[in-house]
Length: 102
Image (cartoon, rainbow, N blue to C red; front, side, top):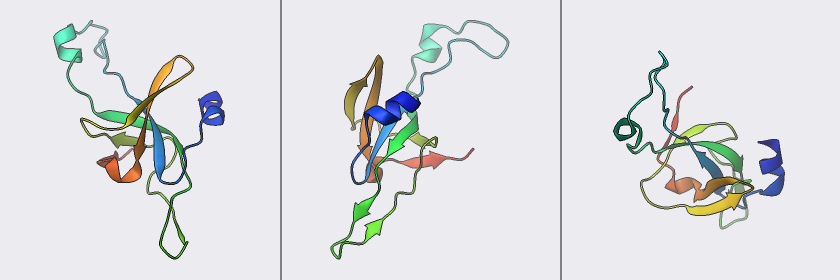
């Protein structure tokens, strides 16, 4: 993760998110069928954040999310980018639906 953060630093109110892949095994070790794991899991982990957006007067408004937060993503949207061997997505903070409490 630290190498990824060094490679890309989002600008303004943009957030770099790595989508969470659904589990392929249950807690007991049973392999789950593909039909159960292929469902839409619209969650991701924030890898890097920009500094925030600026108001008309030039004041910096910090982001509500931070590195390591798990967020709920919209079904469509975001810009897909490849960072090394991983596919990640860049969203504006206003596109994110919410933060999953830890």
